[in-house]
Length: 481
Ligand code: NAD
Image (cartoon, rainbow, N blue to C red):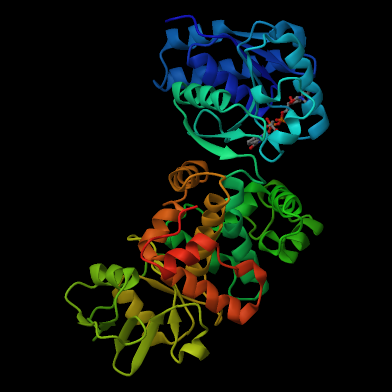
């Protein structure tokens, strides 16, 4: 193996030692420094145990493990990182300790060496301020657990040299990661675009649209591995609330990112989630058994066109279709009509509503009625009817539209590309698809119409539509940022 540059890692916590593992296995000599005496050495011992487990499971060759461990050294002074070509800080998430450390690192590193910060929320521009070579500082935002998560957000501050960012991207690629470039703005890509996944569910809870387990079931059916409530329980409501508050404050109180009273009450009451034994749920979140399809086929006609109807066609092969312009899409059985939401409430639409079908394997769907006939009709398509209050945009449609809207704004503002946003959301938070894939699937027009209707009901600035999404809905040529 050719001689690769030495990498210095500062901070031997959960992230730092993960970065050490990845860099050492990629062939780099690595030096690990921590302010707490003995912490770096202890972390390396724990890493040895982790690698031994990988060897015993046949996922790592014993000689690769030995070579990687031989490349890692615990050091106790910043000066011992002098020969490193790259130093990555993964210390406490606070501005001043990070800035002090970066200045110390800069003083000992060679002028061409790169500096990187694993910060998940602080501005790279702010961290670089005070350095004599701010252009060498790049955000290198790994995700937890570092060895398993492929995404690395490579973040450029106002002063970052594009060549330095490109070097960090190439390195991340060489380490088996998928880098996505982001401009240093609050939440970067993932922590920004993901906000509505939590925020819309918290808003729906405040509107008493349904219980947490019902909202979770709807969103799991849309292909998300975990529902927002069980995920917030896992992350910890204190942590989730802090990230939300940080993005909200960094945007000078923009209502789009406003924190939730529901979550604040959980934090105030010490219901932090799994770490405190109770959050939304005590123990595992409830699940429903697979719905039984009725023994006899029911008379169903599919009305209208669009991705939701096409998804139903694949679930109900051979059923009658009525594709004349009905002004709504959904299904009809006898006198019963059930429409896919367009953002209006059922009382405005004049018929009960169902949520959007976003995933081929969906096993549940929100509806605004507890009519047993509706439950039977959906069961014919393998869908369990999840009863919701009559709420504008329901659950899946509203959440996806808001994710698309946020991603559209991020691209509009030059934070990332459309491809970058999709990759980041799939790899950083395991979304079943990226927001721009949903935008293509449902179409900008339907998404804008949905958000407009929610806005009409709520008059909340939160549902304002991103300019390029609006432009794409009104012209054949989408407005390019
Ligand atoms: P951690 O608390 O597990 O570890 C931080 C380590 O840094 C500790 O061992 C501490 O002793 C050491 N440290 C603190 N100040 C120091 C200093 N001045 N010099 C040297 N060492 C110092 O933290 P973590 O979860 O590994 O997070 C580290 C960084 O990574 C933070 O910026 C965090 O925001 C970011 N991050 C965390 C996650 C996550 O899920 N934990 C994900 C992405 C990014």
